[in-house]
Amino acid sequence: MLISPFVQSVNEAPDAACLYRLDGDAWTAFSRQTVFDAALKLCGRWKHDGLNPGDRILLLMENRPEWAVTAIASGLYGLVLVPAYTTHLPHEIEYLLVRSEASAVMTSDGELLARIQTLSITTSVHLYVATNDKPSLFGEIVGAPFQLRSEDLFEHDRLYALIATSGTNGLPKLVELTHQNLMSNVTGILTILHEAHIDQPHRFLSFLPLAHAYEHMAGLYLPLHLRGEIFYCERLDKLAHLMAEVKPTLMTAVPRLYELLYGRITTQVAKGGAIKQWLFETTLRLGNAPQLNLIDRMLNVICERLVREKVRQRFGGRLQYFVSGGAALNPEISRFFTGLGIGILQGYGQTEASPVISVNRPGSARAETVGPALPDVQVKLSEEGELLVRGPNVMRGYWRDQEATTQVLRDGWLHTGDLADIDPDGHIRIVGRLKDLIVNSGGDNIAPAPIEQEITLYPEVDQIVVVGDAKPWLSAVICLNPDFETQDPQALVYDILKRYNKDKPSLVQLRKAIVMDEPCSIENGLLTPTQKIKRPKLIALYREAIDALYGPMASSQ
Image 1 (cartoon, rainbow, N blue to C red):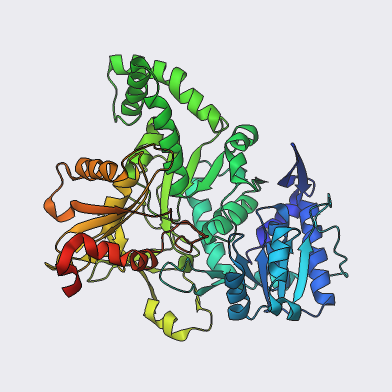
Image 2 (image 1 turned 90 degrees about the horizontal axis):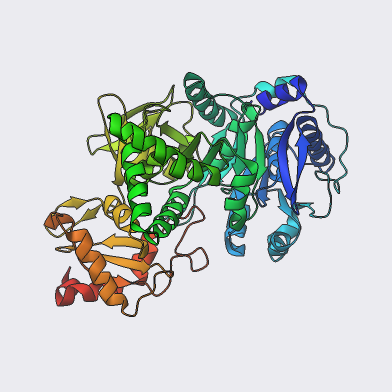
């Protein structure tokens, strides 16, 4: 069972701290035994309330120790976890409740509880609340005695969670993940860390939503299996301060964080003098050079002291690696941080694979790839170039949706929907989503992702979607960076296109673009909780303006 290594760690060192909560300006530590006792107390309460193994429990809560305790307790008792994002709107929460046929809800006091209470369906389910005024874990919940059976710890095929897909192309589907699915993912990562001799008990700063399959596996169970410590960051505006304070050794993040950090650092450097800019550019060049001559080695010592050490201190000074997942990372950003002495290991996966499929290895990372497949995971390409995956990490199916399941699970292989290349040494290169592929009026297939990744690095650009399906050339819908002042947005867009198109073949050039009325956000329904733009919805919203870019011929396409 997925929970077994944590139970073993409790027996080994019950007083060792494992979860930390920020109360004001001070951290409150919770030992393994305290966490385990709180989980058993929840199990006893659920038993008293008549919940049965296999029942679903929706979990809507910020990243905090009670989230982890609820997940552990669900695994021990046999409830099926249904994680929800704190950014979910009431109708989205209701969809998850109805779709999963949940019998219970776990949430936190305050705004989230108020959101839950607006739903009429919650009157028919058991409601549990983690209050904010209790120093202990679930101190307000009174649980009946609960005896854990040792045989329960070995039921690997038991359903553990129903995790919602991002829903970029419609309503999210619920992915059935078993204990064995997630356990195989954690085991694969542990093997890689062991081979790189960095499998010590790490310190993690958890800030990605735990409802995301990536953080659920890599930010909760990987640290617990490593006998590590997890510090919870409930507010993103505190992240930079907490990194310096907590001093994490491993961190998981999505590309959007690296893009923001890249933008802030390059903007600060651009405001500096010529010497500062030269030193920074030299640091990046030397940090990515395969070999250094004598002069470069001397320069590199200066760069290490004046640039890299300062950058590392901003991240706490002990960070060994960032691990990137959830979306494609621009190779330039990976090289940027490598040059600054901060390693980024880019991986790849999807919820249906628990979620990690591949990851770059420490010491042999290649920025343009997402690394080789995990141990015990097989990959191959279909005739169309779609990446297919087989292994113990692949989901059981979509919850009560056999038609959707048979579309992606065929002959034991998961059809990922991603176009890819596989190098002779096994490194995987993701080209783009099969559904996002643009087929122009000349029949050429164009992946928009590489174009969007490149232009997103421009300091003036916040978001971009490339369009041009059934059209003779490509155009774009662009959201400009609100921090970048301009009196003439269209002139700025023209400059962006001119800069991008330089030296580009005509097939991937952008001829025209329109400016978004507002950024894509969760609130306006154009962004998923995992920060992915809902392309079909955005294109539909701007359809008339997009067609106007192409003139009268657009209506006949």
